[in-house]
Length: 486
Ligand code: AMP
Ligand code: MG
Image (cartoon, rainbow, N blue to C red; front, side, top):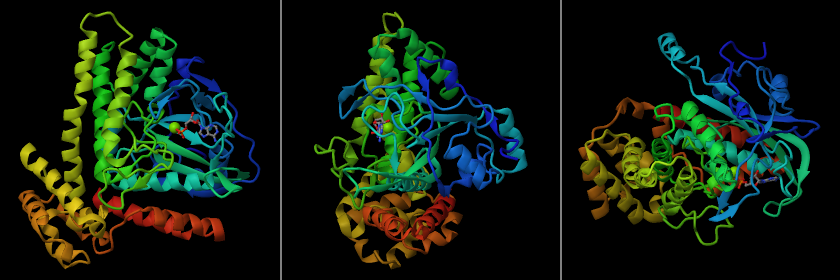
């Protein structure tokens, strides 16, 4: 049987009509090689029972899944590095399917009954590298294999570190070779499928606003409200903005706590659900460095590590500008401004929550939690490259319950001095959260990091020897961390 009985197609985007997307055809690839299939993610949409040949047929050749309308290239605009570009849109990808999430088999039957009655999240299968579209401009519509490998790794690590993220579902190598100025060329090619909680970008609204199509903005508002923010009142732009602001504040805080630099925070790369997606030149921080940039083309550091909240906020102001065009209530601009200004407080609160999660301790109230954020950042700054970013979270996960492990471990000698004393005092005020998690083997192993040298080494094994074992071993270790922290 190709799909499970939990597979529930719900192709809502197509219902918006041809003004929002274009039916497209996938590239006619020759021989395809399945390199990665994410069965855990597939199980959440009833697709884990596909055999490899069926998998390649659906995620490499894009035979439509049951109940799906066929590939649609989504239309959108966006600000790229603060310059408005009306020539964007899905140029090398499309929306392949929309499916309701289902409880996984691992969940208890009682949970399944409960969540079956509730509305499950709507997930998109979106592609990257599946061929040209009307929005390809001069591009070839393709993805390099290295780019695909990097997206798989980034999504897995972000998920493990508790960031709301799209998941890589499938990576299939094609028989093509590509010319790229940022990779030794010709370079191998791939087609990726990601599972994402929406691909409606801030730039999707910008396109409607650019064309002064307030009717389209209203249609998008209602689409986003009913599918992704059902708690929002119909027709209330400021309410919708508040929900999108809150979700993206949460995301920005989660990136920072994860030590992640997305690299390309353009308005077409931010989603109305606040789920992180589209991983290109990303990097994880080796050590505390507010100015750390990921993309070689980000010469001014616009999207540097510590500037990410500001970048997200700037993008949200553009989104607010789109919503300003609808309605005629005299106080609507003030209401939108107020909703937008909720970003700062929401970000700070989410940063506290994210640091607590990363350190595995419980909240003790705003003041104590904020002290923990501040002292953790001071210790990270003080510790510099000798300490690194991730090792601190690894060593001190669980708070005082990890004292002996941290102080007796390889970085023990770094844990002294004023910054450390302040950190320890603050950390020890907080109770460990589910300390039984510390029994996981990952806490006896070195921290699971993903710095550029390791990413390059994983790619090099694939590139030079077609050796995929470092890639799969890395994913297995990341998954062990995810399970330990869950
Ligand atoms: P990104 O920075 O990856 O989010 O992409 C920005 C825009 O460029 C999007 O509209 C992409 O669809 C488009 N794009 C990126 N790479 C290619 C490519 N190789 N061929 C066609 N379009 C592309
Ligand atoms: Mg993009």
